[in-house]
Image (cartoon, rainbow, N blue to C red; front, top):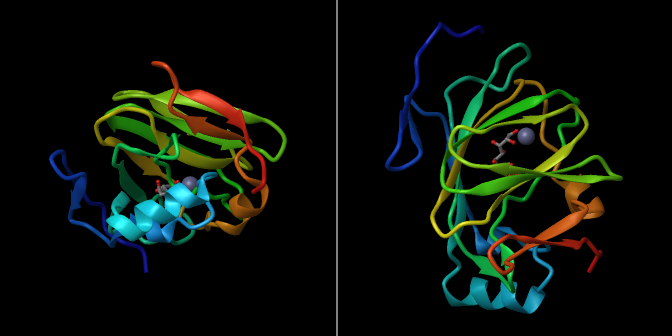
Length: 186
Ligand code: S6P
Ligand code: ZN
């Protein structure tokens, strides 16, 4: 059933939404196979299994014609020098998506299966993801990186594609600026 017009209030201290839909937490243990340095990933998982990122969803349903939103907070850190990041996904029903940087610094890594692209993200930056581009977010700073996403309700989420194809690059801690290394299947 269609939902009524509504306003949603962003909660800057936590990255939450009021009213809210589901909120999910991704811990290190949920991110198997993502980081190149498997031993460093295993050590981080076994030691404290920290929350790497959280996603608060709006109450807008994932249904055709609707535009659900989410706020993602990626906590700062790296695994074997590779910055904390989201799993990344493709939308199986290819459609565009809009991101807006809210706080911290990071980037949007996009991959169409051939060419990786990097959009630096900061508060006020709108990142546009065209249809057909897999996307992953990376925190390249030392404070939480937070952004709003708005996506078509029937876009769907395919995580297997990224596990199979990678994202073209790995984003590593460099001297000041992030460093990009070509993705190699492990
Ligand atoms: C949804 C949008 C974001 C991500 C979120 C977590 O289309 O791109 O809300 O879901 O940033 O990333 P991931 O890759 O774990 O879903
Ligand atoms: Zn998406």
